[in-house]
Image (cartoon, one colour):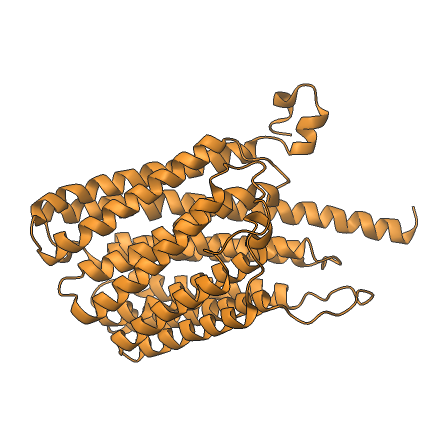
Length: 443
């Protein structure tokens, strides 16, 4: 075998090993989503509903739930997908697989330690800043690996497309959020009396991982994938960059304590991004729904409706919130309504392909998880405001809140089961080749 063939074989082997690491990221993200994320969130909401007041629950428990959802679930997915992108760039670095696993171990340990410190209070003055430092180290390992990749010098150089710049802006937001998290946990460990970040600082910081990291990252990948998957018109890259700039401006102003101005900018950024991505324009090509439920493009648009609702509620909350109900509804609209629905829709479209070219196990399961997630989110948003704020029929809405939580837990369980069964099945090409596919399930 000549050297060129050996090099090609080595790259193929590293690509397969990297895909296995990516599958570990995705499965771990599902575990964080299901157990410390959603299950703890249901427990928190049932406890709050039983006592009819938000202040009755430990802020540390609420922060444990939020951290597990934002960083443990979606953050783990983002890092895993980022490493997957290396396998499609050509000239895979020799250290890529090793760094993928190093980052995985640091990230998983950091998120787990943060959750444990918040929930149990075990040695929290050390555990909180240590968990934040481990998460930051994991991200820097990931960032150094991805940014250090060198494209094939023989390929023609192309200018960076707008969607790539938006994703880079989201990555910068990720780093900014992790640095703030290290600062906040260090401050809590040094000055605090419990394993919880102070309410004022936590309220301001929440805008960073959501509007500087997650939302722009989704916009960037939407610009890349939706014209192909949903048949949308090509996005307006310049407008999308402006929307990202508005989102960042809103985040910076939120950190300065100007909630109303920040909320107005975030609402404007959401509207501009939806227009730039042509989400509600007529399609120009038939959507590609092979392997997924045909309702996929509908739920992508529903996610942007939730983003608009989140923007409006954020403005209302900044102007009139008294007991945390409007703020809570606005956060739920963007995290579950926009980000959750988008992950459920696009995730079930792309993750099976990323993890070894598999086909989604159940299209009906995909539809059921999306319908239930939207139903649960709607019940939560509609009920949380009158219940927490003490509006008319507040007692009725307190009873509805646990129903919304159980509905969302059911949706998350279906989503997790559908993906996990998919990962246990053989890749599509092996299924097609083997007359007895069941024998190759764990091959």
